Length: 316
Image (cartoon, rainbow, N blue to C red; front, side, top):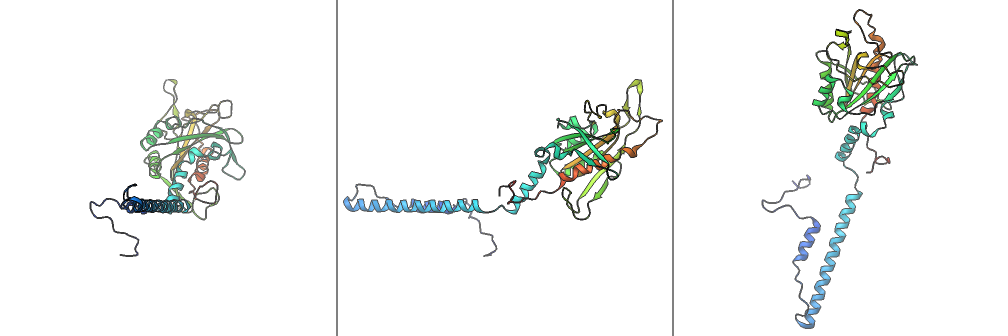
């Protein structure tokens, strides 16, 4: 129907419709141009007149083409183009943001005044290097892009946490990855209620996560072995720091949260590297801030991107 924005297509075999400028050229192709020297003076005048018509037509075609190009340059981005640009910027945050922005120098946790201090950031971003075998295999099956890690310590330098950002191409891959790590345990969810503040995800967004206290280690033939799969980020030891002795064997707890394209995992242990041992008192509560540190790192990464043409960040 006329006016509904839908135009009939070309008839079968007719090929694609020619652009406006091409139709002008087709018209010009039909103008006979007499050959010079034919018909004497009258013929030459006709030839000159014909060349003038061709030149005028060519000028008109150039003006029309220039107008169309200018209109294309002057128009603003469409809604689809804005959406694609925002999605791309969100997916590349792990690569484009400075490491210090992803992992702030200080992260508050627990009671007011408690702050985890960053002691180092790993230069390695490989998925296999940043995750233990269980988590690494699950991430590889879902197209893991990178794993970024940083280690924090409490103010007394007695507890150490390693936080790892795992980046995926699609939100479904990140969610499936975390469900695998949660295993048969219920997958916790945490809705974000109220109005989002600066650096916080949009209202109504849901994060999914898990928390697991690792079992005590046993020592067959003097070798420390964790019973059962760990399913988390590898401990990141920072030489010549309070986290210099923090290894995978010293991990006491693993946790992780996912929202959108990113999953953020964390693990915790004692700074002196001691492992949990059977027969000793278990104190998982002192390691639980790992979950809060993970969600604090995840929050800015998951905030939707807003395309603002007036900002120098965007070229609209």
